[in-house]
Length: 165
Image (cartoon, rainbow, N blue to C red; front, side, top):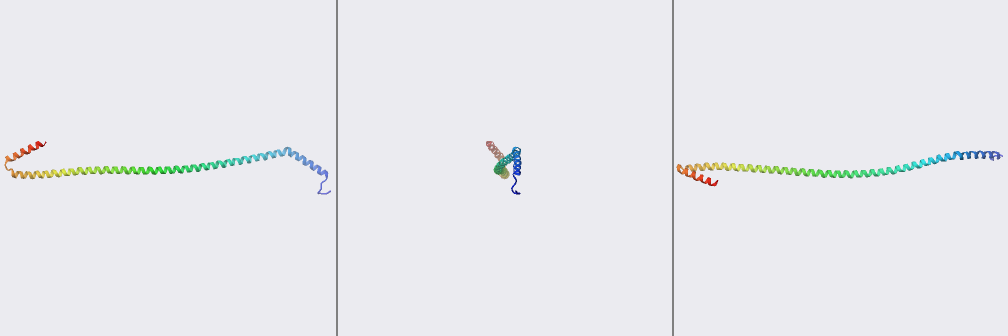
């Protein structure tokens, strides 16, 4: 027969060898191969599951970080606003204290000026009084040349002075 059509004996032994190899593979090889493939499939499925969980956790962490950043920015804004308010309050209080201190100093200066003015007026009055007394003394000396008239005038002035007190 030829090369293309095998003889029946060869075909029998080929089928028998194939059957034995197939039986051995089916009995011992395929379960090991299928077990390895199932293990690999489980490993890949588990890896995909872990990767999916990792992606979900990463997304969750990113959302949390965005929330934390926005919260921190809000807190920063609040802190800055409070700092500005405190600064304005401190400036206002400092101005108030400066105005009070200035007013106290002005009031003290006014009192000092008033006291000095009164002292000046009293000094001027004393000087004028002293001049008036000297003038009056000169006039009285000229008019009262007699001792007796001077003594009467002195007695009358002393009586008036005692009545006033």
